Length: 226
Image (tube, rainbow, N blue to C red; front, side, top):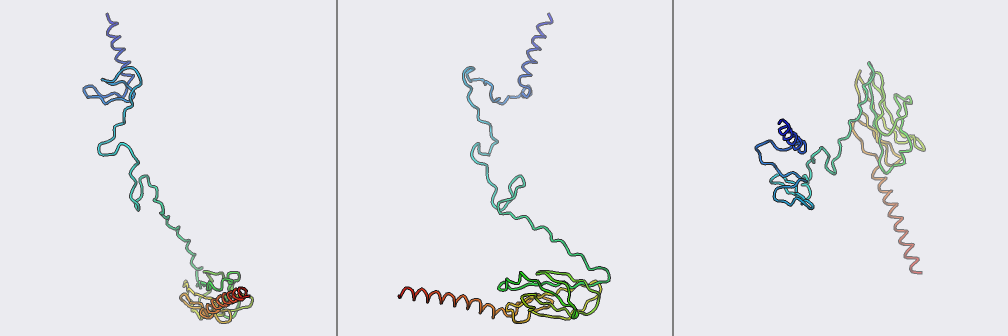
């Protein structure tokens, strides 16, 4: 007599195991994909069910693209986004009891050959360290100094000098600009300088190009008339 209730209980357990994620009792179940539904034939291939989409969203088609200029979902940057440049390392301060002259050397693009040579500093008439194109720190005791810079080209050229007083812990920026015309002096000062002789150098440069073009045209005309 006890076998029938157990069999019914066993059948209920098997039905529960076949669909462990079924709806709670008393609620209308949603159609389960891949299982025969009421009103559909039990044999033959099952019709494919379209997945239910949330109301208000399209069921097919490409996903909406975020407007240009705003970051897309997921944290990926938009095309053309540039990462901020890493911070430049700061230069250490001068040693205790010392001062510093920060010499910034540069040249005009028309004298590009200067990149193959180095500028040099003279301090109170004594040869100082070889500089680089760009910023070079020179630490000195407090006092007043005559700073002179020139370029070690095929000959020494572009001399420029300035008198600079220094106190303990002070850093004084000095800007040196090599001349654009190699037979005149350079420029030095507490602010960025213009290259002396730029007008002369540009006149010679473009005049040479114009003369070369003129000679080429004369040669072509002479050859064509022969």
